[in-house]
Amino acid sequence: MGYARDVLIRCARCQAIFSVQDGLAGPVQRAFRVECGRCQAVFDAQSGQLPEAHRTPAPRRIPTPVPFQRPVAVAPPPAAPQAVERHATPEEMADMGPLRPVIYGPVARQNPFTRGGALAIALLAVAAAVAMLVFGWPRGSREAGVRAEQAMQALLLDDDKSLEQAAALFGEAARLAPAHEGDRALALLLRGSAQQDLAERLEPLSRRDPAAAAEREALLLQGARLVQEGSVAAQAAAARAPEEVPALRAMALAAALTSGNPARWLEAAERKAPGDPLVAVARAATALAGGRSGEAQDRALAALSAARAAQPRLLRAQVDAAALALDRGELASARQGLQRVVEENPAHERAKRLLLSLAQP
Image (cartoon, rainbow, N blue to C red; front, side, top):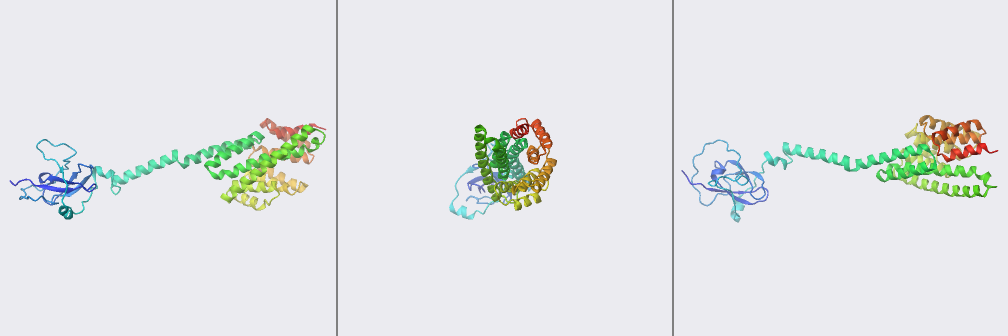
């Protein structure tokens, strides 16, 4: 029987040189698998790599597949030789060729080009998608949607406190999803225009009542500030996304309230959302922007009727229609509409003020 010989193996990962006895390596020039004692990498090696200086004829071996052996990770019996790390000489390093890393078994978890590696990558991708859904931008979008829905419910109530809340909630939503900046602008404009309308209706009473005069002045200042703030927000929304409906309808209402040109914004909004009730409210304001003649009032009433049909809970459309009926001398219709609004929202101060004006001589 020949003597055992050592075979030098270089780790494919950390380049460490190991000495494994030929009895573990198998037949000469046969590929076998080893595990690095330093970095635990498992890789294929050739038994003919870097032989030791003392070579003896290889003993006769049966050419059968050699089972997977782990000479370092699993401690062998005392008599079994273990892989011993030692440094190779420059001549040995020059003779060594590149070793192919193993592409099956446990190492597949680290190799993306194997079936197991591909499965691991797929699982990681799914985990990343779930993480993004729970913690990433979709979560922000979901939170923005919740805020926007709460804001819209407040906007439908149309009283001053609700409109203030709607603007604040739309502002929170806009910080998460900038598309809601146009909705915030619309809430500001609706609140400001309501205060301006109340100020105008207080004008006759303010001539003889100092308290009414002071209230009218405060409403004018507050209304002008809100309309200006809403116009700036609408311009910012239009500059960011000029084709989005919230920006278009906000710009249309802002232009109608500030002697601008709402036509192009309104037409674009109606093309994008022909049945949108808030676009219809903007159309009513646009109809009255050039004056409150009978024809303009008819166009505004038609737009408000469409808004109420699209969203019956939109109290702004009902109050504006009742205010127009009051201006036209249709007192019974105005009273009926305003009473209905107060029943739906007892906090609606504008509707209560208009009802109070009907009771006054």
